Image (cartoon, rainbow, N blue to C red):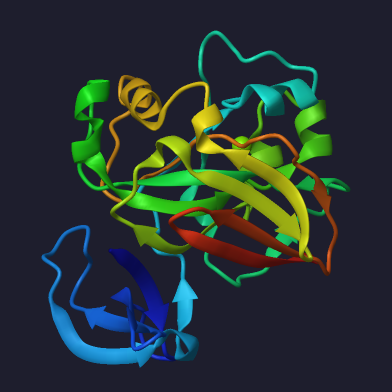
Length: 258
Ligand code: MG
């Protein structure tokens, strides 16, 4: 099931995206699927006629992991860390499909990073890897936008990775998906950048969430970014980024300078 958040000009609502007679339709549902049963409102709109929004606004946090693909760590001359390298993005970093992403004023080197994002559905603390599936609502595409020059200059990645618009997610949350071997890639203005597979993750989705849950309590709507494959590249204002993950779809965002 594909859970989207959308607007037709009115207040945002949730909907299920489904194909009908060869056309993608959005079936409106009541309330918030994180907290209420999925019940149709009777609203049915063509996907073409809605504006998709970030499928979830994290209630508290986006937890990310660095260097979770060996080939990406190697492209910066780094090793895969013995301890998982976690960092946070605030929920103000999150934007949706089609929203412009802004190069920070202090950076000359904005880079894309295609990542599989996991949406948490229940309060989770100290979960065992074998039980992680019960904590997951579904998966979406994310872009861990990074001011690479700032990242090189500073120990903490606050300015490099937590700025406004640094975490586009979407186009929807796919609830029925095995994340263990999905094609994941990115392109800029149609030109291929990354071309990887989630099978190359050093730490699996289950292991990451289990480990994160020993540090912080995960809340419904929190988002986990699982690292990026090799092939990251710089993007310029005026270009358009596509992040594509098999079984989910494509997240597209234009790049602007403030
Ligand atoms: Mg990343």
